[in-house]
Length: 393
Image (cartoon, rainbow, N blue to C red):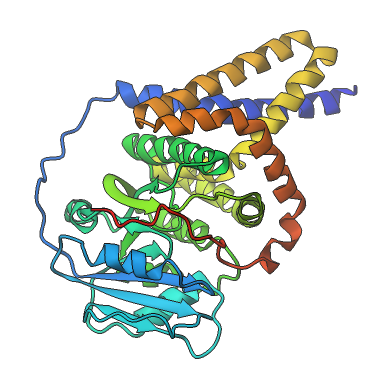
């Protein structure tokens, strides 16, 4: 192996290794920091526009609207944007619900959001985005109020699984817990920003419009662009660990492949934004931008896990010491994964589902093969009616 290739080989392994062990070391750093007490137990109520977007599917809309109407908050309206949907069976009699059906197919999250924004019934100062398959905790808006009262203009809540029966749903929930812990709780705790998760997030209307009104985002990934725009403006995204949204997890192989193909496609499409944030963070000595930029560069979980295993096996024939280091790094990652599950009090069904990780990885490889045609796949994950549709009390 030539010296140049060997140097490149080492650099790639270092990058993979940092992605494996970096989050764990950040968590240790987080625990060493003095704990800050949030003295705000109550906050003034904001006026919320709750935007619920649906594309082609309406079966779960009655459940999410029913859940939202149980919010213990006095100032909110619900805007349901039914894009390319048959709304003949939708009947909402509560005056707090505004059903909108675009005249033309929008096929875009941001277009649906701005369709609602341009039709607000009053001048809301805050908005929160909820998926058509979500349910919400009754205290959701009250928990958000406390972060807005502290001066934050962008907040990511917690997306907990509302269905965990079945192998894929359990593993999808485990993945979410890992990201919420390291990319939410830990990043925010060390002074950076939580990553956005597509729903269960809230913003001032002014900030949301400033970030996205001038952009035409095609396909999935609006949350990737939005989080970049927010942090690029020198603002932090708060992580509200008590503002809970219950999310429908993928339960079938076809769902998993289509959804992950879109997600992988968005990473390849937008990861380079991380370089811009890193440069800006170094130039401005801005810790938030530097750390968040590094986070944006990290590949999807399964990609660097597969790469780390592949490099470790190859090193058995190239450099045994590097193979040992690779095994140790994988061990640190596994420990870090279980730390996230334990700290988040993961359901026992999630632990049972971990035996299916090889199959889960296989289907994500199929997703990687399909990544080039990801934008041709429906912009929404197709969900199937399941038993877990009860409202959250």
